[in-house]
Image 1: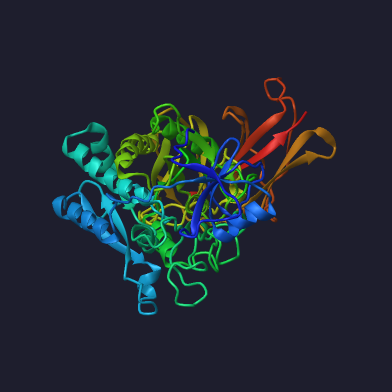
Image 2: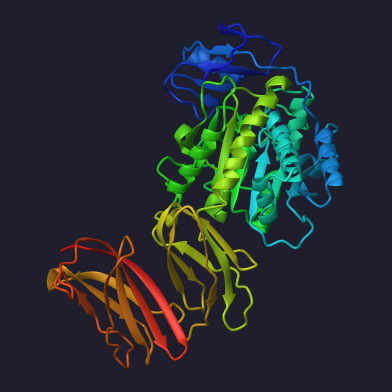
Length: 575
């Protein structure tokens, strides 16, 4: 990435006294995650540091950081009140498309009266879709800006996206018409309105955090004030890339979701349950995807996440016309826990991304228009990736016909489920899962209901499948299926089905990892203790061919009168 450095000189022991924050570049292989990392280049790291941190780097570490000069001309940018006026004007001008709602309070609104500098501010969400006032069940996209105060342009650009989508919808653009007709788009332009005002008013032009008074000294945006909102989400909170010290720019707060701003985002996201989200930040010309808290944590959906991130990056241009945005796993930069993307994906199953725009904080206003144009292309690609290659539908109670909520859904051919919360469907019974091309198996289960499985193929299209779950007359946990080596014949495997219940007939089918049927048979069910006869899978099938070593699935279906139960178990076979 080509950086635009307006002024460069080396820092010695005499430091300027007119600034509290310094934007520096360090040519040193050692990464310092306890500092405020702005960007990681091929052979350097950019930091935002205070005077004490800078002195430590120069005196204690013996480094000679390069000082980068940041833009301090904020003409053209809007205040909090200015942005709110724009949102209300959009709602007034397009009442059938746009609605604006208050989703929570900022810290200063809650603490108003304890400090003369505090102002009552709210967190605002904008809903954009055709027939915006309808009682919606359409899938949701979530787009956010300005978790970090100094990233002023992110709020401005998110709002510009709303205006651009309205214009294209009004002009009859086919893609945007389909988008706004089939989906709900929610925008939260300012996650950190208090911090924005610190920067906008010039109190500290490189302020990052909110304005929480950590040490209760009634200071305003002082050295020990503020929480990094993008470290405050309660997902592997404070495990990496944070600091326990108030003065740190990456201080994550006293606990996960300690801040009113992140609480507002959490409560709103849990209410609307977005299928996908983008959070806009600066800078770096990157598109990031989960997980960020650990380099070793691989998301179950990583293949699809990385593919979508790559496609978004390819659609975004760059300021100089030469370099391109790059897609990368968040922890590939440096591990950092408690960020919004990890929470949305890990807890809610939302496919979440961060776009690091441009190559500096709050650039000249004349350069923001270029960022808007280029990133709008990436946003439309983001939407497009979720309008294909997915399975969706509704899950109902078979007896009442009413939607079931809290149903567990799982794609059995994906790995890494121990890293995420169990994914469930929406309160209206709807589910959605974005997938790569190929064959997949969807498992649907809920306590006291019979589980169901559905094998399907996605090839650039969409798959619709509704489920009607029947109440189970089996034991609470259903039958137990175990697959283990045959101690009498090491090359065979034994499948045992236990805890079935009397009177059930069973059918077993074995599928290869690619979904091909290998073997089907009906084991005998014994009476009394309700344990199925164990049966042996050996290397010779009915047609005389050998069953190859590999990964297989055994599908067990049990039936008694109108009661039906299914279970799928993965096992390895070696001969």
